[in-house]
Length: 388
Image (cartoon, rainbow, N blue to C red; front, side):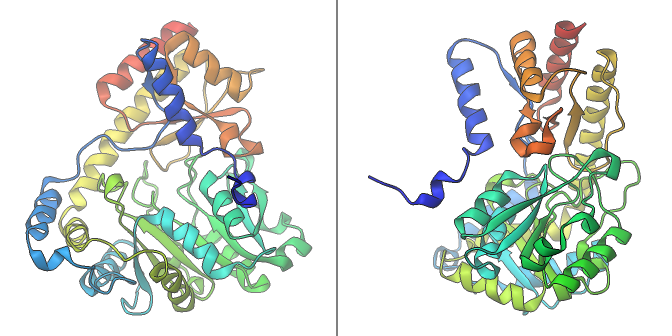
């Protein structure tokens, strides 16, 4: 059976390939430690789980979700309150907030809502691979904008060729950044707003790591600068701050025209978010900010352990201050794939090769801190023994 041509343009999804590699090694009797996938292992806060169970027992919540295309109003109001408290951003819950089945869904729906076949969409290189896949599925043309260490892993917007910028209809950005961990600042946001206005580019600012920052780094929303709502939307999620990756719940906020368009795509794609999950999300946003502080403390401790280990084997660098990833330069003269191969051979540790995130990921690997402390300690001991 022949499948759609668009699928042939999409490379295998990175994490599915990693899972296959890990499963095969385990089948061969190898005790593999994976530092490749960003999935928190700590449980969702108990109060959130209890709220889910309580609401799930109500038969009224077994029907189609309330306000299925946008999310229940109580959830949207809580998102508005949270954005106001955390980022100083004012949002109209009726017109500027949309509930999502995770922020990844929002990326896909944004492209379908804004991009016509043949339109250019800007994305960073390195960058989250799902952006490229969504662009291709919508018939758009991805255009890679390099982000380099010497520029703080921020795109130099002035280096985007004017003919490309004039043809672009959208742009994906993600800070704190996966995979580099880099953080953006307000001056960059102001430049981004001006760039987007000049060229009529709709910005999709994917911000699920907004709360995972270190060393005094300010938590920021793209929408916190003047004019941002005129040019884009921000996606966010409860996955990282509240250890809710499997719950699949997030939000799109910002430009009301884009929110309406994304909502129209969504209402023709799914039937909304299970009401008890929305109630549980309200509980998390309202009462579990302490979980964010606890998780940042845990990741900070694990981060220090990995950096100390890498230093002892001769890999020294100044890491950016966001996400629960470390974007690690490979030893001199060694490619990303070579280094990932040696880590697997010598230590049975799996990491993500930087080239999985684009051409400019060469010379780097990505290490995730979302593993239990004991396994991370063991992984670091194996790496130190294997490379000493």
